[in-house]
Length: 264
Image (cartoon, rainbow, N blue to C red; front, side, top):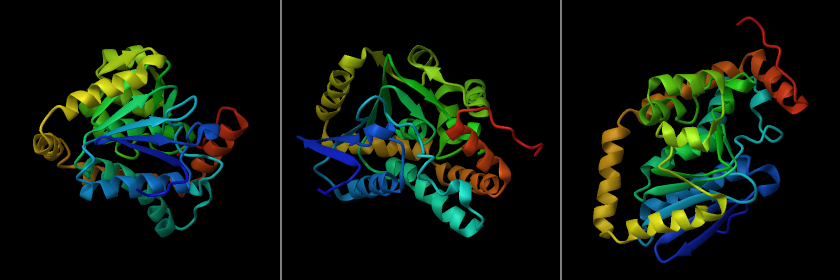
């Protein structure tokens, strides 16, 4: 197993417990975390001994999205470099969907922006009562459609709910998430790990080939247009990044004020 800096990998009898481990930053995504997530999920293609993945976050949150203090997005002036950076993020989502193991996300606290997309790309989501999720990208000048969010969210919750969430960046609490089908279950925070273990155990009770074949069938039937959707999202994010709104959005976020956007 790889020695990761921002991930904790605990392999238990065919189940990988993968923990995002930047608790001091609410597990926000810096370059290292992004690269390590992509490496991990790509490595699963040949990991026949791993049958199920449980994804969770250390500390007070699942994942607060991109680490604004660590990202280059607000300083980009080269579209080629911007696209390279954007694909570094979206590549994680594609790797998650292509891995043959089902991925269970255990969500507590904030799951925002890229963290929300990690949850959406998982096969099953279980939320703690403290969970709050949103597509935060649009709040800092980007498109609300990023890292597969415009692909997965309408398929999970319908067009009206998805449009509301992507066009506003509004938060969804655990209760509403369950009501609209965004998550499979909501449990008290101190029961979240047990709920994940119970679901993983049920998956482990199935035949290994049957489990992988079922994940593959679902992926083929649901994700047939995912690559095209992500490519369009990537293009739009680079267009946004080349303008002034992203710089203003990031400054406003760091200064904890309402952004003053232009009339684009």
